[in-house]
Length: 168
Ligand SMILES: CC(C)(COP(=O)(O)OP(=O)(O)OC[C@H]1O[C@@H](n2cnc3c(N)ncnc32)[C@H](O)[C@@H]1OP(=O)(O)O)[C@@H](O)C(=O)NCCC(=O)NCCS
Image 1 (cartoon, helix red, strand yellow):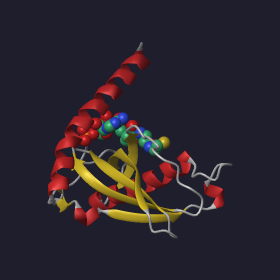
Image 2 (cartoon, protein in one colour):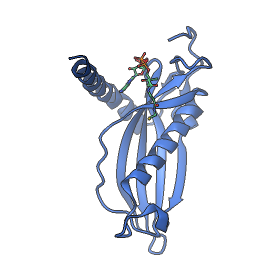
Image 3 (cartoon, helix red, strand yellow):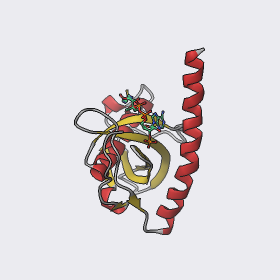
Image 4 (cartoon, helix red, strand yellow):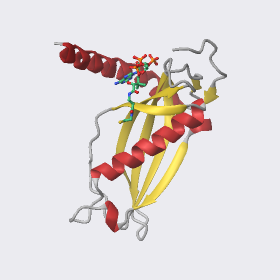
């Protein structure tokens, strides 16, 4: 950590990013379902954009929490991804990405997935750098802000165990 002065805080809304993708043949498996890896790629991209929009730093993915694919997304459906900064820690922050699938012909829209990612902001020398705090404004944003602390505890504990196992 190299920077001492933390820049001005921003609201959650200021760095929210929405992205829409159309599921094309190259995005699917032989059953015509969206590939999990393609969805993970989109989640990572939209999350990184939100983290960078908030911090004005190059942000790298430090971790992705568990991902459950609840129902298949079919060829020809639209995927709507919405990313927001839930909480900033020091040099890292948590982004939540909500994923919806939409049948463009029927208009039916379903919540397909939620992912939590941790990004670390790097300065020009490539070192982790402190990030501006985020200001939750709505009830939902405040709830996510509170829950993010416990999620961080769990993922740092998991990381500690992995590093410990590596050493032994
Ligand atoms: C992420 C990375 C920059 C962290 O660097 P590091 O030298 O381990 O730095 P630190 O231990 O000081 O950690 C920096 C911050 O990252 C957080 N962090 C690191 N690993 C983490 C993990 N697995 N999960 C959650 N947070 C993590 C730390 O808690 C710390 O956050 P804080 O300052 O807000 O408390 C480094 O591990 C890296 O470059 N990883 C590869 C990133 C990458 O290539 N991503 C693309 C996927 S292939």
